[in-house]
Length: 154
Image (cartoon, rainbow, N blue to C red):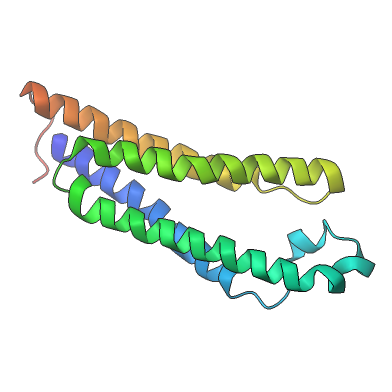
């Protein structure tokens, strides 16, 4: 069972990391406002804010991709070898931007009536939390030396 928990946590953390890389590349390579962002900007102002918008998208995209790459490193080396701190680092480092993105999306939606994406951030936070819990349960069982109910996956 510990092996199954380990692979489940590695898999879930990896899904989040790969999403962050995809998201980052997508945001960093846009050439025009995404439809849900454009909905928050009045039509006459869009040309005036386009340069700033694209610069911010590059920053957000680069940061997201870097976070995804850092996550893959933490997953591939310390988490895979069983370092307990790695799961906590992934939980904290991923949750901060997810919470900030969700709060920002809700504030923007309230101020402009634009669509909100907090649901996506909520799913990502939930997947990250589940991966952390699975890794923590595995680590606790491993430290105590007891086997969990089923340890047949090898």
